[in-house]
Length: 225
Image (cartoon, rainbow, N blue to C red; front, side, top):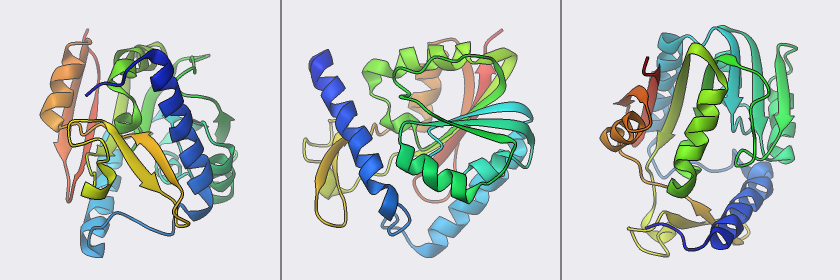
C-alpha cells in the first residue's frame, strides 16, 4: 500500500530520519530476532558477496550508517565517499573507520544529488527504506552518480515482525521502538528478489538479486547498454 499525499510521505520520512538519529546510541544493542548462527552465516555470505563484486576505484556508499560495511568496501576501493542523513550515525562511522581514504558526508538521501561520478555505488539495508513513490527517482540519482559502465550493489532484507505491522501486512509503513519504548513510524518495503529484478529491469537496469542465509539478499549489476 502506498502512502497518501506528498505531505504525508514527507512527514513519514522525517519520522524515519528521527528514528535513526535517536537509535544511533543503541544501534548495536539489539539485532533481528534471528539465531546467532543465522546472523553469522549471513554476515559471512554478504562479506563474500562484496568480495565477489569487488568495488574498486572510487566508490560511493549511500546510507553508510555506523560504518558497518565501509571497512569492507575499503578492502577494494581506492576511495569511499560515505553519505548518511544522520550526524549521530556518521559520528559512529568516523570512530569505527578512521581511514583517510574515506570522506564522510551528511546529506538527506531523498534530496541528495551526486556532485561527481563513481566507479561503483553501494548501499546496505537502505533500499527497503525508500518508499515505492520515490523508488524510481532514487534509482535515477544512482544512475547519475555512476561513470559509464559503472556498477551498483545493494544488501537488504524483507524482515518485518508482526508487532511492527501496525497498518497491516499490505502497508510499507511499520512501527519501530527504541529501548525506552518511544515509537516511530518508518518505511520498510518487503521487496522480493524476483520483484526487485523485474522492477529494476523496467527502469533500465540489469540487476541480479541473490539470497543468503536468513531473510537477507543482495543484488548487483549496472545499466543496460
